[in-house]
Image (cartoon, rainbow over all chains, first blue to last red; front, side, top):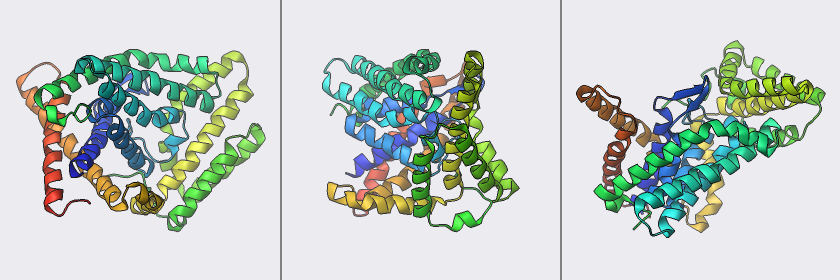
Length: 180
Length: 199
């Protein structure tokens, strides 16, 4: 029980810290950060249920006003802005990533990459694109166009998530709660 | 840790947090389906007036909080400038700004402990499903404490890397940082158990 709680809290903090690391600006003001790497890792390391709980906890702290989102954003405003769909998709993305790592019994690296891509990209983009389409008043294909610049970066992040999960499985197998 | 609550103390800070959240939810539900630029303009003017009524410093702080939205406004301007539906673009843009500003207003005028108290109150019915309010409160505290610790640990690793290599550490630092943090998390779990645990 205590270990679950501290691990969930730790990974919620990890998402926050990865949002703070130096960002690269794609177009000025549109940052690529490692925050979605944190979402992927929550799923691939903690598994579906705990991973989703860690992300929900992170979002709760953002909602009550801690500036933990990339770029020091936070508060209730981000949940009605154009990126709200991505935020709503975050816990579901972690859940799907975790589910794939838990259920698919291939090597951890492959399972983690598949989970990170399916959860952290496919599922997350579905929610994010739907959100942008609603807030910005665009059709779904038009909104999808706005999300494409991030695709390459997110694929690279999925690769990192797989590498880190595999490394963790090798040096600290007990910490990999998604594969008990 | 820094929060987004405004340091400019105003009357809006003294309203109950639950009331502000309920009003925000209601007003957002009214605002989102609006399609007429006149109504949206009136709503935007009301929000601007509400910010200005809190004083100049507060209003400026509110404007700074809206800054991350500018790339989206740029996209809207280019898009609707190109298609010629300028009015439709204005409806979408002003509505987005108004909705976000309204939500930011609640964040800026409500202290963290008041919001956490509301969260604990809302979480109480879930205790039957196994989510005890005490565990939730401890977990929130842990995240708030872990975040600077993790940031500090990662910084230490980056410094160690920089002292030894001319190249950038990049993502290579994430795994060791996670390992260090996992050890910390295990120690905290032991400490919690030693003090009677969470059950």
